[in-house]
Image (cartoon, rainbow, N blue to C red; front, side, top):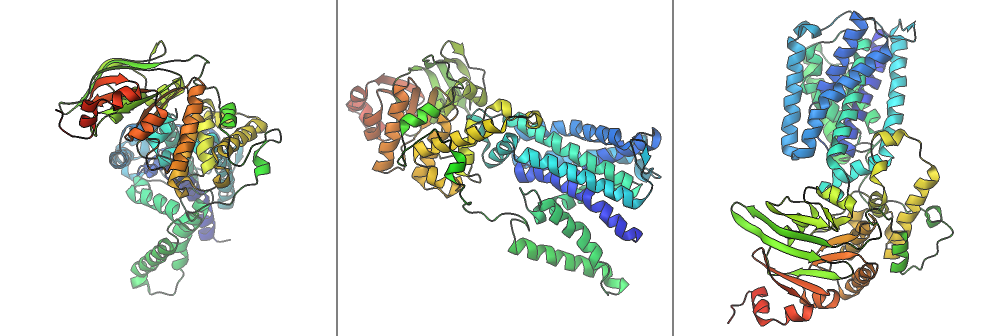
Length: 578
């Protein structure tokens, strides 16, 4: 076997690992980073220095390289949790440039000359002396990394990653940790890139800063996109196209004087054709409904439900997280917030009591949704405090308030559109303790996982959504999306629900079903507050009404008292009062 072919076979698993690491970040987490080549370089330099200067064996050298890359990536992961996608992109470019400059200027890394004469790796005292052996070793590590990635993406942590990819505020409103998950996925992705860097250094036995520039990051991005985002085998196919295809073109009978440009043009055209006809990648799935699983595989035999749905069954299935059996009021004292000097909410004091549905009404721009944002923790108030029961929750973020039992919906229906209906419900049902990266490698009884999935299915059945359980949430009708939104909130086991226009856009049949569900929730002692523009809906479902205007509470009382007030009615419809 020629040295050239052995080199290609040895490099392929390295770039597959790089593709897997970046696919975990972009394909599953939806985070675009241009610093992956820098982390690749950190692992390569750490391994080369340890193996050459300290006679370290491969495993500890790879561990150190991966660990250092993960540590460097934590700052980027923290930025990912705080910045918009555009600013994150800029931050990752800056990190990439800084790392390359460090490689180029530090004496430890050999400056621009790099590190040469890197010895072949040693593993458990055995010296890998040939290129074939090193290539086989790289493929073994590639298989191990693939198994690790498979375990991650099929776990609750992987589902949470995909949920954050779809909609971060919606995931946070269910009590999910966005910042911690983004930091951890950046660290895992960088660590895998660092391992790939260590294997690369021992494979080619020479590294320099030019190997880890922005061009390399673009190459890693190409591997991921061409293979298919969010697919386990995509990086294999992508690496084959990006790494092997240019080498195959070098064997074409083209004059040496034009071989370089012609090969580049042919390669570019092939990639463009692939992206045009397979925009989701060569292995990527086309969007659309998925095949439905059998009901028998999902539901335990000791449950029996009608096809039309049964709210009593739904509440029997709800978890108890955030509900300690005590009926609690959600109240605020003196809440205020300003935007550019304009008071959106002005010194609001109110109490949302359990066992009844409180409706916030008022003209457009009255501050109803802003008040919801303050009560749920999505927005921080300038002044005032918020209490749930006897606990002051003023300083808690939206996800921490959700874990205390206070959840909210949004004006627009915010589902995880790229996930199936049952996956949407399963994410809400999953305890956050089972969603950390480390917990995925702690054995958990399969029966508990199956029961959790079965419970998600049975809750869908109670909502009348079992027939579309394996359809993507984005493919549902508007009424079905509304029901899934409310069901997903119920699956959190919360005891206080802030629902922003839950009836908007629904016909009378769907509205009656949601009304029945809300009344059943109230009968269980749940605390509910809705924002609603339809006075008919307010009459039908609310037992207490709070009227807001210009960020202040004007009055509160029964629906009959508030709605029949001529001055409030005129103010609501924008007519001048007498």
